Image 1 (cartoon, each protein chain N blue to C red):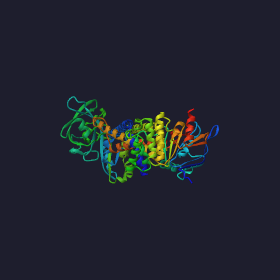
Image 2 (tube, chains in turn green, cyan):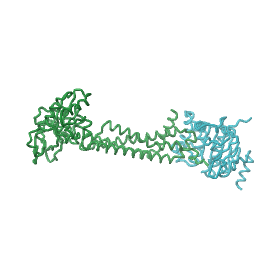
Image 3 (tube, chains in turn green, yellow):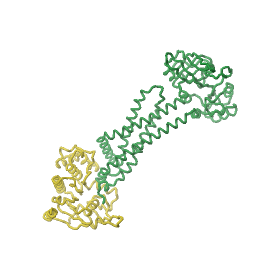
Image 4 (cartoon, rainbow over the protein chains, first blue to last red):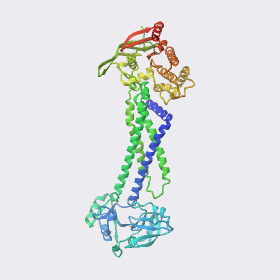
Length: 390
Length: 242
């Protein structure tokens, strides 16, 4: 076996090296496929991350929605009375209300206002992100804000600065100043950079319809629930739904899947990635098949002089692996180089696991594509290949 | 009693075709001793290439025995026949002889590699053999950088380097001009005699049999005549010129 592998490697490497121009071209095709697949994966990760980042980083076990809101945060409206009722349910360790809305950050100079997700959170409870720099929010009514890293990068605002938020109150635009007390890690919500303000401040300054402007009732969107025992998730969830009227509960994963467009977007990108890999298999398979057809006589000679089938097969497999590895390496380096020049507004995230899965899939497409050609090479009859058959 | 390197007994090869059974080789028995160079001649379609393929362990006869170094090729499975081709047989073909991405010396060394015998001595012998064949300056050339005659000489070196019992050549001069053809066959014959191999050359060109010890004439699959001795062979050559 060792002897077979040694001869096969020798033949494979010699052939690749002596025809390096031709093989490099195929590697470049694989590199381009790699570039495409990695970018699609990074785009999928970036878009998915942009949608779910805040929810996926929440320190909560369940999310309570208004009944029949289909777990869509924007469609759910919950009053403070429900929060009190949820907190009373057996098994609930803590509960916090959050409210979501959009706002525009007014930036100095002629810069376009930055559209952000403005989230109302309860200081010290689930929903308030931990700061990397500065302090947490102080009270429910403070005119303070935590901005996420994306907002900080895109607005150049820092801890201690005052930010101005523009919202629509009925039919009028109004401006509110908030002091930045902290900066958190990336916490995008539905593809927008985020700012976090104390819940009652949020309720005061968020955009409202004319009917809401004069309302005295404080309404949030969802309630985040932390359990005393996360293993009791199913039981507490059922208890919540039965004891608190007009609500439904969901896990974080379920809530992420219900984000508008999230599932459709991810499945579209996954399908694109899958098709690109499939095209890669066809391209590589086609190349090696043509190559084998061109060297039928040469393989015939090798077999006639005593090279066994495993030598021929291993030689082809080694070539395919070498060409694929070189192509994937070049493609990965190209992708990395290009990614350095992308602005932060492009939702591309190179996640280690996703990129690794894409790279492993790319490394597998070579041997998969070459399977037919290897089978063909093994079945070449030296007698026919050398024109000796009658 | 003479011990032959190669001996066939009543070899028959038949093919089925739409028009019925074709007898490509019909009851051929022959013997070749070590150090003997034999030519297999005959008109086109006479069965000489089929016979060569059987001797080369590339084709199984329908019946009969092909005994090489005491082992019957006809009764062997595929794996054993591949091993026989690698260890006991040397080949040169009409064309596409060499592996195009290996240099002349690498092509010759390939036979040693396949037989797990590539050591310092083997490498030295490969170079010496190529030098003897007038290819000292071409050792590191790829086949595409050599003429047809030079390629045939590399193929001869490859066919002999692993000390096979039997050396087979299928129309080795087909793509060469007359002068180079004579040179190639003369060198081939010299090495076969010197290294005591059994050599068989299939050729349609009767002028090339000048350097062989015996000529076997095949017609319609049958061995019809054996020319032995220099005078008989020369008569055959003279006859072919008229």
